[in-house]
Structures are given as structure tokens and as C-alpha cells.
Length: 138
Image 1 (cartoon, rainbow, N blue to C red):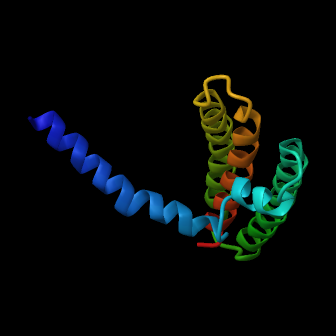
Image 2 (image 1 turned 60 degrees about the horizontal axis):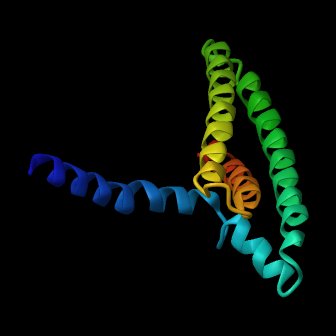
């Protein structure tokens, strides 16, 4: 009984707090997969990969620019805490990349070998990069 209650409570927390926060953090009306599906319309599904790759590339570029600016802003404060803040940012970025790789691999593997696994993984990568960018704005 306690296990069922705990699971239900966890599900409520995830759906009411964590997932909406993630969706809001992405800053997009729709995820990368939905965005590319809308963009390619009735074209063959093989057109998804280039679209998703483009979104990921754009997000990587935006993230690199955001990190560069953030590092400069931290350094420019001249604070005695700047060194610690830069180290924390670097550690956070390393951990984010590990998480992104593992999470998007999990998303692809969850397709159980289906033909969309690669598209799911690409979309995940773009979406998580967008999420990271939004988190760095806070």
C-alpha cells in the first residue's frame, strides 16, 4: 500500500512540477521533433534527420555563445568568487554533456529498435540543448 501511494505521489510531483518546468524551460512552443514534423509536412520521413541535425547545430552554436558570454560576465565582475563560479560552470557543463548523452541514448533505446529511434535521439539532443540554454539565462 505504501509503495503504491509513494509511486502515485511521485507521479503527481513529476507531472505537476518537474515536467512543466522542463517544458517551459525549453522556450519553444513545441519540441524539435514536432517542429521538424510540421516543417517537412508530407515529405518523406527521411527528411526529419537533416531538420533535426540543423536544430541541434543551431542550439549548440547558441549554447557556445551563451557560455562564452557567461564566462566573460563572471570574469568581468572581478569578484573573489569568480574563480569558484567559473569552476562550477565548467563542472556543470561537463555533467550536462554526460547527462545529455545518456538521456538521449535512453530515449533512442526506448524505441526498442524502431525506425524512429535515431530521430528521437536527435530531437532529444536539440531539446536538451535548448533547455540548458534557458537554464543559463536564470
